[in-house]
Length: 488
Ligand SMILES: Cc1ncc(C[n+]2csc(CCOP(=O)(O)OP(=O)(O)O)c2C)c(N)n1
Image (cartoon, rainbow, N blue to C red; front, side, top):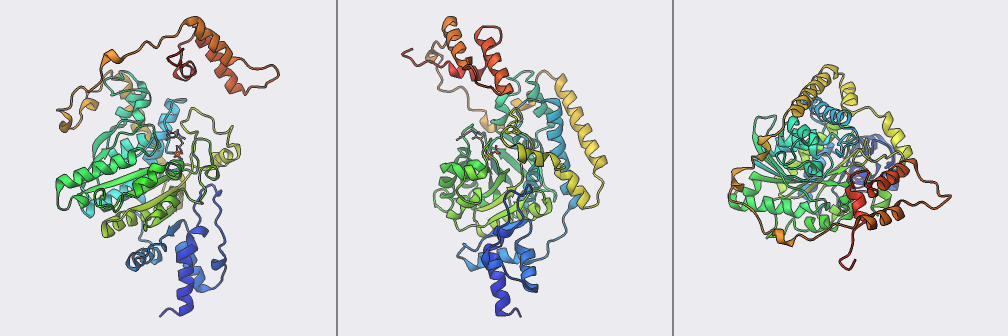
């Protein structure tokens, strides 16, 4: 039987161990040495292994002892062997898809998942486990980060469809080119590792970060209500959050507050913070007053599992607990998946100008499928070449198609919805006199003498001058500067 001292040691680690855990692949979020953990001994080493590895669990704020017990049993048990072949397969595909997009469409927005592709095996595990426990449908709310990857690997869209959108061959038939591909919803089917089918509803997403949260939960609740008894088991809502958005947008906190309200409850939502520890160009210390973006979730008595995304086995372990906890206690649960962002915010910006040191470190890190394969002693070469070949072939096909009727196929329940309230008579004249445009444009690109302009900005200003002089098509960013009020 454990002695009283042993129990006290473990309790200290259950409470504060997450602060000393190894969570950030880049090492900026330094493990803290908490005074209550600054002790030595055999049992301390044991407790440290459970609570200060690549998983940091926050759960001692949960008042219900049964829930705490459930969580600590899992953290203190030896990890079950991982299905490393499957995890590697998924990491490789997810990583190579991004690499192919990067090499074929350089300078195009993509919102790459690289640095945090462990999200794909995390979603796999949530779906596998949830389906075993009764999930038939997933309502998924997410923003831009990794959306294309999720469309291919979770929603089941073909890579060809995604590439075709990059080609923008016929924006109408592809339901929109340009930015639209990051906002459209999608419906598809997912087959779990255990052979169960889950219908996936990826909710359309506006630019306004986190606004999708209550919409996704509302859709999930409506589906659950229609199904009646057992609906909350059959329909699982999952929300993926950006770290800066989750910490900063009030609607994220408002949505958490709906969790246990009779009119809004969904039997628990699984939240995953797709945490790259950066928001556009802002570091976490500039966007969040707390150590973790996920601290906002402590308004609810729910567990928060922080996990280092460079340890995909740990991430999958946590994903499994998240799904099981949701099903066991009908509660929200948070997975804070901490990785990094290999490229700029949208790949068209250059992060080395704002975060030069961070990006030098990032350049030294191999893709996670490489480090994972090495750790497990698997040769990933053949598999990655195969994935690359597959995506390159899909790309070739996408370049030959002119229309893709498949994307027109919304589920049939949308059939009765036609038209809308829009009235073309509301159109207003937005043209601006060319002389005025030139004058504003010249003022806009004028640089005071002696001011040294960054070379990239200089090029942009030159392009803008060409635009207002009529030598180049006016782009949206430039047009924004010429917005007129009705009074002129
Ligand atoms: C409400 C709102 N504010 C600001 C923006 C502009 N914006 C788009 S992405 C972004 C950074 C988001 O960072 P994070 O949530 O960490 O996600 P990441 O892109 O790093 O995955 C910002 C500020 C927006 N789209 N919506």
